[in-house]
Length: 223
Ligand code: DC
Image (cartoon, rainbow, N blue to C red; front, top):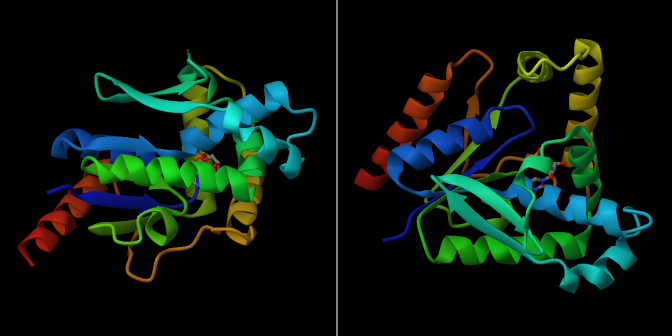
């Protein structure tokens, strides 16, 4: 039997760290759907004169080929034959992803790829609309959240650790803007599915969150 675990939540809630760890522990495939929106954003930045031009982007989507490969369990995104994984986390790509992810045809294309992936294997998929739209029948749905301040601090620490100069207040402003864009967009806005378990990770450690999701998974398997 194939299982699917949907993990949704805002940027910086810790979704990807937790989902990666759980996928390893459970032997499931990890699918980072944000990376797929980022890959389309990268393509749009390089090929579209205006990434907000929804009609133009929609008319060229057939030219965008996105594949996921796995190297020692880590997801690699292949955009038109090129491994672009290392370029996806840049700030500019994240901002552009927030723009293209509002576009209907972009969402349709990626949701269809994501549903196919989950149809053939056990997956842990993280994103914004996994429990509500991509996998409405997921075996377990978790909505992870944390206060904007905690999420901004996590991002600040991550960048500082990498030696990048950054400003906490600027990051906090960015976090709030991204939340607003994700929560108020017309198609598939960020919100918990009615049957999702909500986990506020503001005061939970990584091990506590992983343990809690594993417990929920086992509990559901028994019932
Ligand atoms: O999780 P992330 O920062 O990599 O996501 C990048 C952008 O893509 C972000 O603005 C939210 C959007 N996104 C989405 O709309 N739906 C998803 N399933 C995943 C990400």
